[in-house]
Amino acid sequence: MNPAEEYIFNQPEPFRSILMHLKGVIEHTIPEVEMKFKYRVPYFYIGKTPICYMNQAKDYVDLGFWSSAYLTRHIELMCTEGRKVVKSLRYKTLEEINDDILMDVLKEAYSVKDKGFWK
Image 1 (cartoon, rainbow, N blue to C red):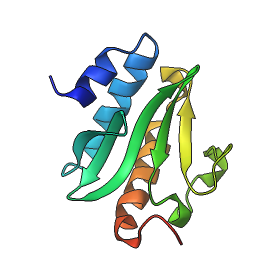
Image 2: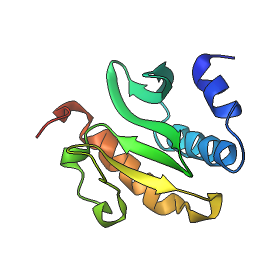
Image 3: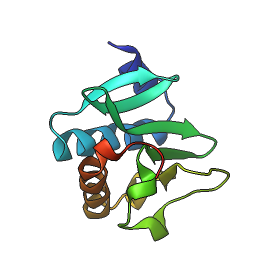
């Protein structure tokens, strides 16, 4: 098992289930994505370009988007609390995840992957 998978499997419930579900949706939506372990959390890359990362913090899971400065879809649902650039979808329960919204945001993140971190 690689370190990114270990990170997911070592989380307590309900976070493990949330992380596993997010991983599945990410890999289904962007089949060429590769999960790596960077900065002590799972990151999803296309080649050398990061798309998003997952982090279990406090009582939620953050799905943070690398090129979030360019995202326009569903930004009203994204958390920017205490951050200047990164935006994330935040989940406390598995039931909060709307796969249609998640896939829409992932597709947009994929479409702007080459634009970089800053606008």
